[in-house]
Amino acid sequence: MANDPERPAPRRPLAAPLGRPVRLACLISGGGRTVLNLHEQIAAGALEAEIVSVLASRECAGVVRCEEAGLSAEVVAPRSFPDVAAFGEAVWSRVEASGADLVVLAGFLSRLPIPERWDLRVLNIHPSLLPAFGGAGMYGDRVHRAALARGVTVSGCTVHLVTEEYDAGPIVLQSVVPVEPDDDADALAARVFDAEREALPEAVRRWASGRLEVSGNRVRTR
Image 1 (cartoon, rainbow, N blue to C red):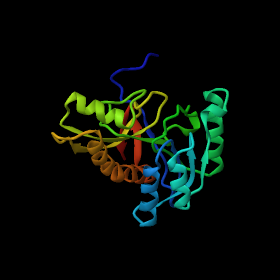
Image 2 (cartoon, rainbow, N blue to C red):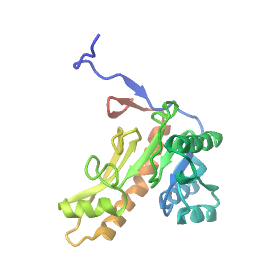
Image 3 (tube, rainbow, N blue to C red):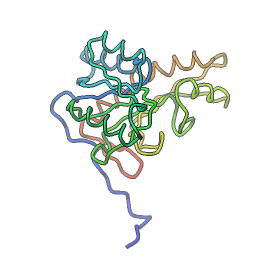
Image 4 (tube, rainbow, N blue to C red):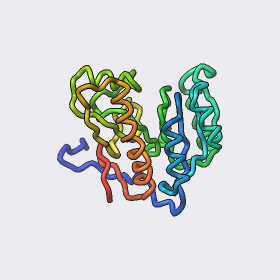
């Protein structure tokens, strides 16, 4: 029988309450500031979590910074594998060996297939209010330059669940910041990152609470 367009989409829970700190695998490609922010929040007792794995898609400053902070970091470079599927298998084998509950894409720029068993268990943070200024090739300062060129008066960040389509997964939360008349890309990026520092830990808390569910492309609280 054909799907009834009037029938509400089924609701799928994101996770059951864990009863312990959520174990995070963090994937990076750059400076690692997002992971270090999570690490600092955990150390301060503001986030009940444990970073059990940091994987980088290339040699980058984030690897050094994470190791200096006492986190184990490993480079898994896509160019070392014959295709995207083999790269994905290498990443997921390491994630699963770490015992992670949730994967956080923290400035991860390589395409990563998401296995069905990890559906609703991968978060990404994007430096705009999606769906504006998202999609393939939109990352970092490219996003902020595009926002300024468009003349928007507000920007911000979006934490969303990852699907096979770039930046199109269900949105967990968004945080809004103003765009000032004299902003350049660096000034806007700094303001957005300040919002990210609060938004991503909060999204992790919500995911780990066991109270979130997805209905269609919307995230709801039970």
